[in-house]
Image: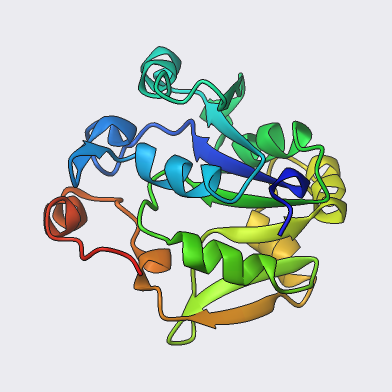
Length: 194
């Protein structure tokens, strides 16, 4: 596996409106939530990008321990997540790239490596048949994302490409820290990934 051929894109531009608190900074297992996906992707990618928007300065501060991470501001973050997908994709220069929301902290390095071992324009992990994140995309998908209208939904683009589904034993691909209830369940008790 050549890390230099892969970029990781983490979306951290949203309002955290369902949580009611700024999610990227919430402590999860002893460190900010956003550190988890960034650290995992840094282990398998030559370059990691974090797309900022709401509370841009706080995200930049959170990323200070990771000088190699590139921060990219999405000026249209208020228009929704797809605008951040486009902002991140526009900065990708490698043949393949991972894409994940920043509030999905527990996917493992092993899962990323398993996805990288598979061919396909869209490679998606699954746990017991349910798809999760991160997704691994080919550079050709980047062009399609950039040409799509801002009202597009990423899922619609991915489904058009008959995603390669990779079954894993990693239930972390499904854990989205989206509400206070979910956060309370996982902030301290999450089992270690394989």
